[in-house]
Amino acid sequence: MEAEIFFIGHLGRDPEIRYTANGKKLATFSVAVSSRRRNEEESHTDWYRVTAWGGWVNEAENLAKGTKVAIRGRLRLTSWQASDGREGMSAEVTAQWMGRIEKTARKPKESTPSLSSSPMSEDEIPF
Figure 1 (cartoon, rainbow, N blue to C red):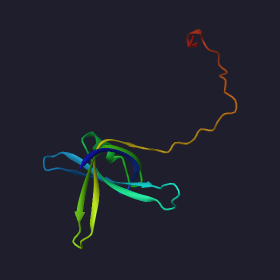
Figure 2 (figure 1 turned 30 degrees about the horizontal axis):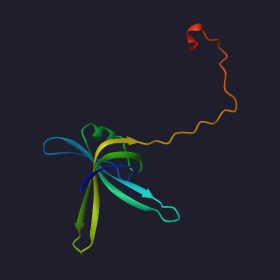
Figure 3 (figure 1 turned 180 degrees about the vertical axis):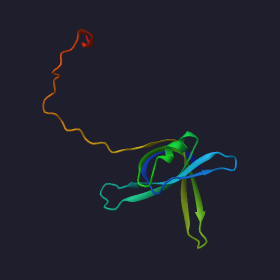
């Protein structure tokens, strides 16, 4: 099954950069997406294996374990069975877009607007 997916999570490990036999560069990494439902104390974490190709490999090279990222891509779910009989499902995503999410410092609210002490020229007046 393939579908498009968008999610925000944290890298579980540093991206691994490799080359195919044809010389194409790719990056692979895992992303953890944690969620907590209302009225539940425990959170649940889903893991996605992400593969980036082309220009997105350059973006992946600047990521590291723990980085918060947003990913959009094609999702492929694959079921598997371990040698001990356990069954499971893996989620693999081919990235079509990705971006780092950085925390920004909050700017303190000013109680009064600041006024410029330098005069404006007529060219700077917006009307």
